[in-house]
Length: 202
Image (cartoon, rainbow, N blue to C red; front, side, top):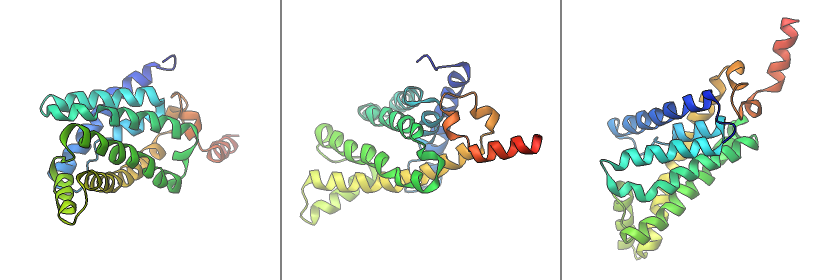
């Protein structure tokens, strides 16, 4: 929390807004995606796990005003922020292929843990497309638990890979002078480009 500088605090509401915009775009275009965690992961990658978790939690609480059942999944959004901060410290977001592979971790939180919440609180039948897929898998002989796990893991994997690709290019587009002012910005700075720029100035 000591690293919650002014720029980090400024980015938190922006991250929340990006989550809402991404989610609305997915709804309007009827995409089989959520796109509602772009801001959470971006802020987590730039500012650390705690700011990212704050973005995820506030987004979830805000959505729950109109859809109360979503508050049960607040832990997923907090987990996305924390994982983004951890992976950023490890330099994962510096390479596109590592970023894509990281989708497995986010999908495990969203689909794996999310399906456990669905099973415990809603008898395994989620809302929307995942609920329909679960129902279809049950007609094939799978248990409701297995159906919920498979459907939600698949849906989240389908969502998180494009989400992380978007996050990767957002991070790449941020100027070095801005990255330098953020808690995890130094990890994301390409040292070769930085040195090359210094040589040109010299």
